[in-house]
Length: 83
Length: 238
Image 1: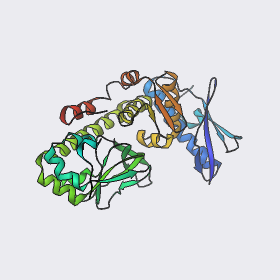
Image 2 (image 1 turned 30 degrees about the vertical axis):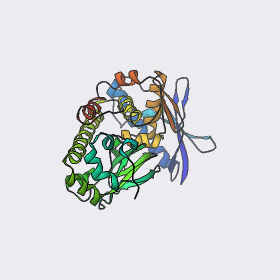
Image 3 (image 1 turned 180 degrees about the vertical axis):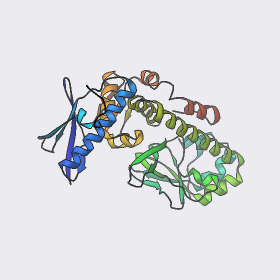
Image 4 (image 1 turned 90 degrees about the vertical axis):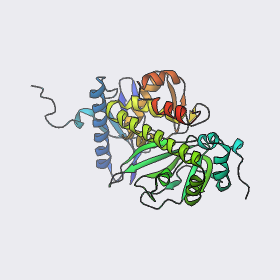
């Protein structure tokens, strides 16, 4: 298990994840980020207020960015027909 | 065995009961510390003791099979743990634990039951508390289905604020995520928003309430009814 931090990218900076989360590997951490993004998007839809953030930056304990997970990756395929 | 005199106790239930009711329960009260994380009632295990809090916050939690936890309700100096024992049952499917450290008194379930048999007014006061607690869980359920994460957070912060001394509350994001049944990034974001409005100041592991009235407005009617029931039926609250 390693500790990963899901920092959220917002227009003028980031909202830091203070505690981090234990995950087996980066794939598991990405899965957590996807679930968390779905919840943030669901809350944005419920309230009609755009989400503050646009992506999670997954970092390790040293603060290195390992992966960026855009919130749009959390939407189910075909969620909105953009044609 | 020395036991606390009624004028000394800060628990809201123990301090409002009449002298005869206190005489029935007082001799059985054992002072205890309530460190954070202590499990007071284990789901599916027989009740052994009830705990009357003088300070701190207790949390009643239900878990899914894959151990996702959701908070059903909180109590502090307003209440007690193990109140299922007052309803004639020997165990319950929820877990009760200490989420904000405090202190209080424990009493064995047998002594609590026998004190309730001796004093009708003790039993009635404690049962009125069970009613208030059910009101709280009802509003939690309403809030969970109708409010944004920010609105629910505002309500829960008010409920915690009622149960601590001062404006600082020691709350981790993990506890908040259980309280609100959301993942931690939703908590972090909601805290960021409410802090941006100037209602609170959030530091790691600590939240300071800066504008309680604004939080009540923001909670949009979801906060206040169970608290009013407590004042109407039991006594001073918050």
